[in-house]
Length: 552
Image (cartoon, rainbow, N blue to C red; front, side, top):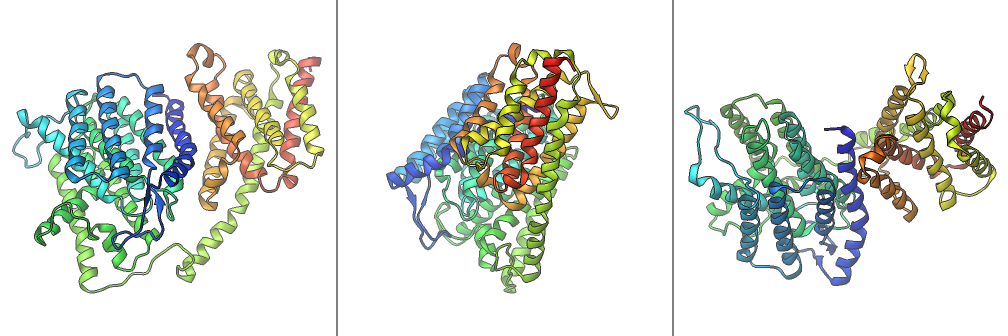
């Protein structure tokens, strides 16, 4: 599976979800579909709860445009539509538990009967031979999917919690699918991961929108179906206990809560505040730190699942039980001895932690300089091209030269659409030139294209650190023009191969996304101080224009 295809299948739903969420939030407010605070909930103000619409639309669009719709995909999509509509109806009208269960069983049944998605055996956990389900395979699979649907739904109690845990699970499932050779499941997990990344931008603490039951039921359904596919399809299916490890946190949390409710004489699905995240909050751990702790547990179990892929079923089941004993044993100890914990990354954190974070943010300023000079190196690469085909570029470099010089001496700020266009378009053009005319060129003993790949990998790494440390996610896409640029780039994978392959458009588009973000980080606040970027574009355009017109 080409990495560039995975990049587009990840980026497309992320961008779609990022664009849709604000519209969905306004629609939710206009319709009055808000999640109001009460004694059982943690948030303190009414919040839109139709975010699942954005997740579903992003995932559906990606599957329709990038996937071959076979029997499995048809069954998965049919069930996904039913479970999403069930959750959406619950968000709008508050369905009864029986009505919700009817929708959940119908969705799981469609996946099993229509898509042929089914677990046939439970491995050999006791060392006595493989447990073959036989005629129980279908009902067991349906019950397992429904169980995971409710496990993820019950986990959705804090900002970003369910989405983050499912994102970690998608990443783990994608790696496991790649190792086991299950390409379809790999792409499905990458697509759902992209949708979640786009949604989590708005759903992290403090959240401005919730996914609602429309989102949480859909995520639970996908986790259940993906678990079954991982253990039953592809060239090398994994042990059925591998998905249990990856999803160990929501599964164990649901089992423990159900056991406690039954012991207390309550209904199994009666709402309360006895979940893992509620217990952590009761210990004095703050909201954001609680979410990070649960993420850490999910991440740790996912690492165990990936590294323990070669272990037998007995060992995997033992690891899962050991993890449950350690986590809940620690909780019981803390609750019994009333060990209050204060741990947070906010301004109320301990002074020493705050100093370290402030120092990290301050030093991140040096990243901008490094990104700027990497940008200069990338934009100067066309100067190294001596190909005779440069004359085919016609007058484009000359036009870029004139526009860049005019922009260099102008006083316009970054918010101008004209300025953004005069930077993004030449940047895309420079990448296109290097990828197509620089194939036979060398620089410092290395192929010019290889040097370009290395520079862009380093640029991607530094840009990622800068965005994470300075929390720049909300500033990457602001104006409609920038959304248009990203959409044009993401249309490239949809072009016929006969058009995209001769011009290496997939690689050009991927590098253009990195260039887009780097331009934004460098120029959006201090454009006047970073006019070297504009001047470098002019220099490269001058070199191409002279070689094209004069044959130099």
